[in-house]
Length: 159
Image 1: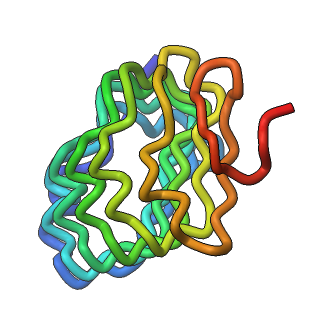
Image 2: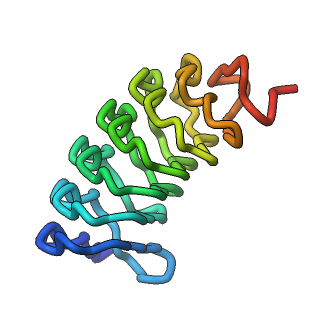
């Protein structure tokens, strides 16, 4: 397999507002998520989807303070959810579904009171509970694997 990594030079595009890549439409694009994406300070939408993406979520993504929507899904992303994601306090949608994330969700995610959607299902190695502050948004919808991640005040509730 001849895999094409996302170029680190993406970090030079500091005014980039949207970056959307789907490995199924781009063939064998994948590899790790470049830490340099954290330099794209104007970024509002980041979507990286596909089974060819590996490695961990870069802590540098926490520098994208204008972020509204982040989706990193359908890959084999491993490791914990970085606490730095909690710095993205204007985010409306966060999706990390379909990866292999592990550990507990950082309490810093509770700083994101603007979330309308939080998708984390199909991450069998996540444990613990949803940080309580995340449920302060009146319209929050949290989709998760109820047997793995607990949440007392989430919608939809576990049955």
